[in-house]
Image (cartoon, rainbow, N blue to C red; front, side, top):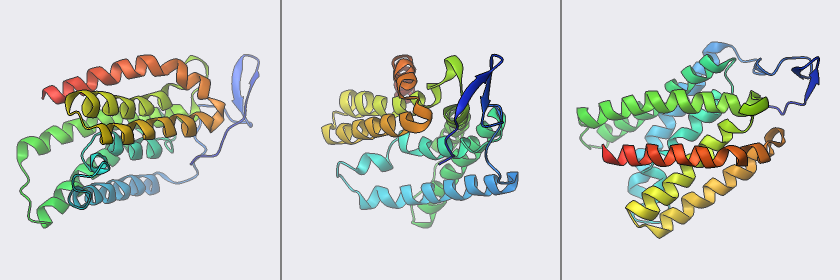
Length: 221
């Protein structure tokens, strides 16, 4: 994970160990971050296809059949972006690589790949990549009122999938417990970074509200 920043205020402007909070600490050149996004996305997509068979009907099966596990990678890779636009672009690359990796692996395993669902997930990857790539950047760099928002979005998507998808719509209690536990773990881990736990909690309610709307819209498609 990116190094922790120590912030202070000088003349009303947030400063971070000699650099403003809007600058990236990443020293990687752009092509390495792009390669990381594509490579990680392809691996996650491929593993997801295989895991759907291996996990079967266990309580962990939801990890290979849900949205929230796929947005963790764009969030973390987006956190390495030099700026918000770079982070969003990296998030999109990661999500689209996940879609490609999943469908290529499924095709190699003898499963049919339909164009309508493929196009749907390409569009979903574009939206999710922008949102969670930028959220990762916000988690690493944001100050002031925005502080805590990025992490809250990632926690909320896991919490909403636990309650809405697996708790209410599908009624899979085991899956709901797994996703709820991950949401709590993310809340703790992401909140410890730059000591933004309290800020994450302040944003969590509106983030969950947005997540509920998004989950219901996705299930309506």
